Length: 235
Image (cartoon, rainbow, N blue to C red; front, top):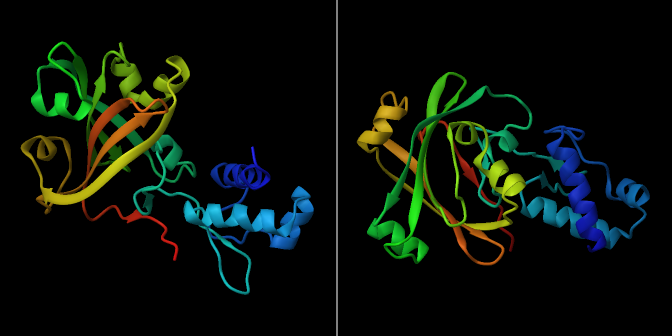
């Protein structure tokens, strides 16, 4: 692993574990040079990557500001994170409820997405997520059962990704995401506390393994007044 990536991973870990707290300043470049024993160019590469991934904001003439990764506001599009990972500060009370879990086969849309045929079958998992007492998220996910042979209520209400990575040893690498706003479906209205809203913000995603296989197709719906989506752009 390159030196700047080592520095990146170490600082990222300190932000995720709250060793460096959100809205405080990161140590100066000179302090980081002394701490890690690497050149200023190496430190700057690490800081640039941290900024690109939304962990810090560089401020001219000052030390970098630590942004961290929050929940409800500022969902960073450049990372694949579970609810527990996004709520690293423990600021929000989050509960995931399994609404349905069953196997489907022969669904043309799902077969086309996965490049499958009628002999393949898939788990359809729907979950609502309650945040500080309100059902603000609703998620429907499809998993190829040739890759994910078993799911149950306990796995679904804790962490499916933890099960996939630690129990099944799957290497999840990236996700293609599309954001849209649309009228809520009857299913979303049933399982979300939408209040006066009849629309939802939707992130539709296809998640891949390191070998290029599609692991998951998902539709994650948010109540529109509770979430913002953030990405970092560089010129």
